Length: 469
Image: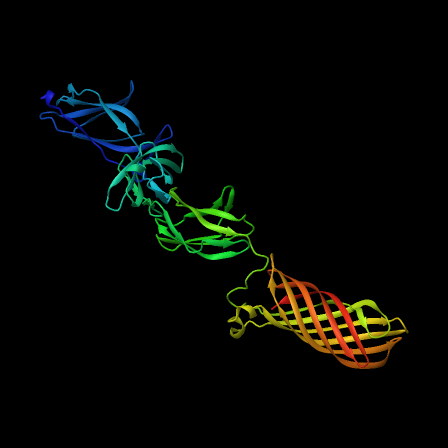
């Protein structure tokens, strides 16, 4: 009878809800149960539990199961069979008893969220996990239920670093699972891991091969295959690199680049496209950058802000007179109101695209040296101007037109005589246009005025500022 005693440990997992309030040496007590097959004829049993050589529990019971509470740790136990006189008749050998606290792991956010298949043999994941320990197992679960087990390389209070075999992972979406040794587990719900298939890019053609210095190209279409979202592009010639300020993936077969050529040296440039996976392709001599000409062809569409106004300093220098000598008095004001002829009629003819009309007015004064007279001249005229673009937002504006000049003869501030005359004007100005629409211009007018009995030819240097509306 004594040799037939069979002992079976029944494992029951408890989380923190099952912790008893009692403590031993400051440790939480965990409730456990031992059970075994009954021995026929036995009165009862004596349960003995020890830790090392120290006996912790010795209790006689008349049932074939025993419930107790101990702190987590490693113990040994034995069951003694008692006869009806409560005397020991047999005893089992000492059996190991390991008590562990069951913890509910909680998986929060983890990184990375995207990875490419070829980014190494292993994948390192950093995760926010609460109540993880060295015995906790971690898995990446795919959509079909398959699991890939990882290993812990670093464990902190609320974070863990894991390593998974990337080479075993097929493209798809994965969730992170943490499983305690007690069987309690949790799966990430905040984010997932996407394993992306690797594409090898290839460039077949570019929409514009010849590029010009100081130009902006917003629609460079690159055709090929294998372009991934998040690609990078470089235009290079030796150490000279042009970085697109926009790079957009239109499809797997097309991307769009927007670049500013600036003062990149003329020459043949290669185009390189790099996918986020690290795979790259290079098209040799994809672009030819040409030196910018002195003047440029005006844009293919009329500009919307075609009205401008300037005002500033202007004075007259006499270079031609039928009688007498005139000395300049460096004082005067001027104003120019301009309207680009940016309508469909003029824009259909390339040679008329930069044409505009100008209302010009100024007031200047000169001194008549043969007598103590001052000559004030007021001019109002209409001119046609032509815009020639230069580099760095500078323009040359030659113009010509005619108007009316009113000459007032004054002595000591009193007007003695006035006369109105027709006048012809030719002009040239250098205009700087700023990005905010502000204008700065300086130039020189030559005006020939036809008065009764006299013709005056004057030079008018001027400098003005204004704004394009």
